[in-house]
Image (cartoon, rainbow, N blue to C red; front, side, top):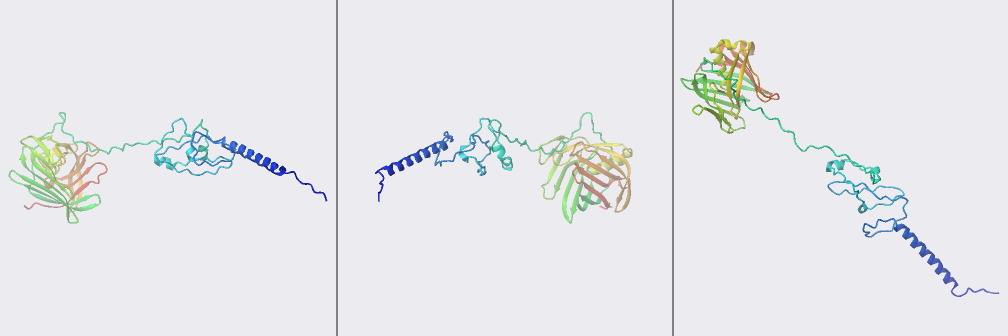
Length: 365
């Protein structure tokens, strides 16, 4: 039997050619894959990537205050884009507030938007200035065109008036004590709710040609410090325990409590001022640096329901001169020395108001 032997080295040469061809093909494939990389960025631990069907060159950046963790997006036949290979746009992108950036979802269409037409999120309109709180109306002093007249007065005798007191949903009792002397007086109002004293006002002073002449008025509310107004008659001014505000001391000036007796004393001495549309004008001061002209206009006869029965009274109204000025309604009883049988005070449109309605009257010393 004849046997054919392969020449030495023939098999080895063929294998070498095959290996050389495979090596050349591998080099070509690697070169093709690497040709798509952006060499402007350093390639740390880069892994060869398969040949791309489409290359993404630009991604619209999201400008936020803190880095955002990238969310992987499954895109078939796309080259995976590493987070550090984001090409920034040359046009500036407005910065969003953190809350707005977190609330706005990132759409895939925005990520794939071309560089020539970037999609920019609208900037919200923000106002950092808080709205200015409403300011109380400033007290108005008398002007030359608005003179404050003086009136004759007929003061009532000593008396204690007891009232039903109400402020908003709170109900209680109020007591007004009028104690005149030969040349001095003291007027005191106390308000109680559930046996607790919530209000104490005291007016002290003397008398002059215009009637009651206060020298000191104090006001104490529950859980608040005492405040005072001082009528310095020698200096001709009104000063206060807290603010440095001063007002000129007009003839016939009253405080926030003494006006309740002074108004009735004026109408008792001059009954014509009780007719409808008649006016009584006086300068009135509180204890917080607040003072101004109060004009009481007669609304004519009116009926008040009290615990002692129906009272035929004369109603006076003081209109406010500003949004937070005091509105006053008061009913005077001609049969009781023109003393107030009812009074309501309200400071501003949102104030619940303060209402006193007569229970009974005690004229004993």
